[in-house]
Structure formats: C-alpha cells, structure tokens
Length: 74
Image 1 (tube, helix red, strand yellow):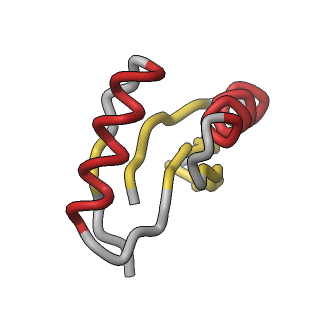
Image 2 (spheres, one colour):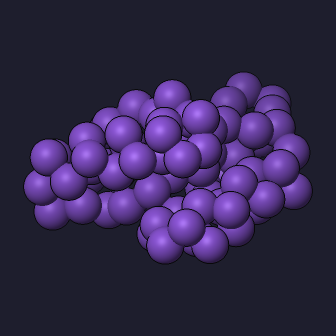
Image 3 (tube, rainbow, N blue to C red):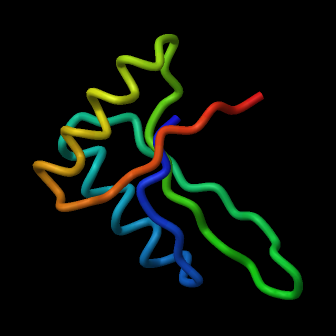
C-alpha cells in the first residue's frame, strides 16, 4: 500500500479519499489508536507488486502534491 496522509479528523481523511477515488485510485481510510488519540490514515492499494505501488505513489505526488510512503502490510 501507499500511505498518503494521516489526519486527526475523519472528515479530512474522507475528503482526501474521495479526491483520490475521483482520480481512479483505490483509496481508503483506516482508523488507528495511538495512545489516547485516534488517527485516520489514508492509503492507496493494495498492490500485488511493489513497482506498481511506487508508480501510483508518483502519480499521487504529481496529481495531488502528496508525499506518500510505500509500505508492506501483512
């Protein structure tokens, strides 16, 4: 997956997800708890090949000015 954002506000995360989906990307948000706070991660994927994740990360950077991180997930 490519993580492209992390927000304290669910609404802000969902706005980014919608923007990415409108561009044809398989974006989703994921809520995680860190200490006593909730964080909403915005990710794109999953991908079968790391090369595809790298390509999409570049696309997100070019089209949406996002600096994503390619990550492996279990």
